[in-house]
Image 1: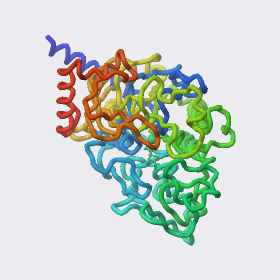
Image 2: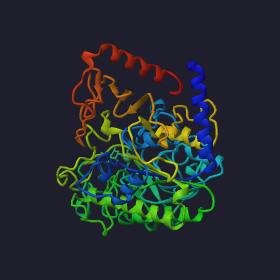
Image 3: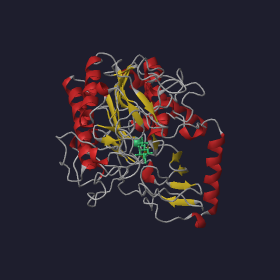
Image 4: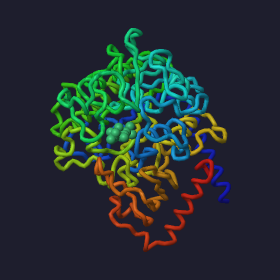
Length: 504
Ligand code: NG6
Ligand code: CA
């Protein structure tokens, strides 16, 4: 009986995904950088207003227990694109700007799945998954392999982060504005060239570092890493949001007649936070708040383009963030002083880098009028599930090994089901496991606090157990009261870790 019911439920789930597949929506995935759960007015922020993002919340589904796959950028984006937990792969932590590509060309990825289904695929914004072969890319020639080799038909990217050299855009396989007479060189090992550094020439800076970030100066801001050359190609931080947004809307316009997938990855509110003058000073929260308003503007531009092109009803828009928030991430930008009661991680403890919920619990909004139910959902979800869910959405079945940790939760993403994942591994400074509302954090000797950012990392030499249903802020470790729950979760984490995949 149970078996029959299960089969019927499965058949229903598959037929509902086939019904969705017939409508084959465009997909726009807006993937912000370091935006916290509490940073949007639709998630409770009162110190600033984000009306364009809030429109998505009003017209779509607002998730309250959705997670980035990790609490920093590279592992989070690696897992998003491959459907594989990054902690299974050494070499997937925050990469320098001259690192080689860490996603093997040819492997099944989120964009390659959609490409296979006939979608035009594009990325605009932050990449941070390395470029080129072992030894890194040739910045003055053809940059390959890169996003174009792992499923994106079009790419307009910043190679790593705003605070890492090279501070240039790459369009498909070339640096934009590259000049053969002024070749680009990049080093993360030693000072190169005779250009000024933040360490040697602090008076040249318009934004000063608070920790690190004292190497090559570009546009009055010292960065991580050294770079020379490429003067005509250097970006202006104040223009970046506009540059990315106009490339994103151009992509939408260009592909309006075909199904398209756009991975739009703005840089804000990652450091350095350098708003366009139109947003400078507007939030009252300093540059961090100003660049959140800038994100909201960018979302408004995207939604406006969809409206104008009459694509709104044919497009699934997802809005989320690659990891939790951080206040002082290395520049003196007044973010801490101007918080004034604003809580970037909302009700959660920790933030970027942390094992606590603030590390990976992020805003997650989905809108597809007529298909995604409106309202809110407390289902446990991860970005890692988008790969299998998009396969499902386009009526494709994954082979064993494709997106190994990704699970199709399509029915949950569109609000037909309230059921999310049973379990989820959260990657912060160490590993934690969610099982329903229970949260287990592995014991570890790692530091409790990141001394530079002052983030509580959630490490302890003893096992930690929290019941998020009654203690969402992870204030009370109840491991001693529930030894068998601790053992069950430690065993399950061990099991997931030693298996090749999280799909069971
Ligand atoms: C850290 C940087 C931080 C940020 C982070 C990556 C220092 C002291 N701190 O190492 O500023 O760049 O890496 O952020 O250099 S992420 O969102 O791309 O993961
Ligand atoms: Ca990030």
